[in-house]
Image 1 (cartoon, helix red, strand yellow):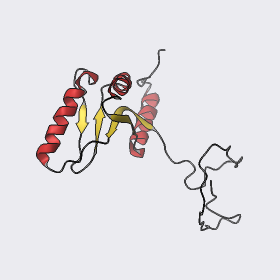
Image 2: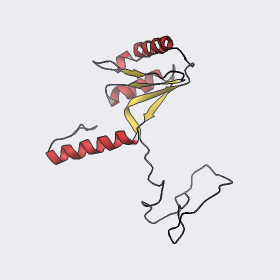
Image 3: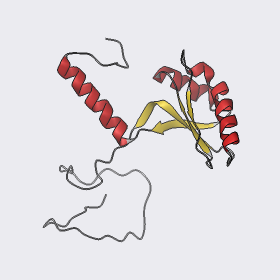
Length: 150
């Protein structure tokens, strides 16, 4: 972790020559909420999966074929409405959105042998929308969907 400013609050420019990857305790013991990049959002989407390592496709017809193949392969993880498949043109990846977090977990376990699959990262605006919806629901006295039993 590098401080973005010096002791007087002026921005500093850093040049990194070596990076060590491994485990080391965080050296900063004080509050770092005002330091740029410290509280960067990292989160996984509960229902969306990311598949990588697919062959590159370029034509719209190939996109439709891949979407249909993935919809068939992941059909049982979509519940009543099926899965939502997003396949970008000229890409080697796709996104699958399942109906629930439990079905997404099952898809991760079952399809790991066939596809290079993992959870998709949540976008920051998705996390903010969820936080706002939860805050509105608590303000109005409604309960939001919870992952555990009450």
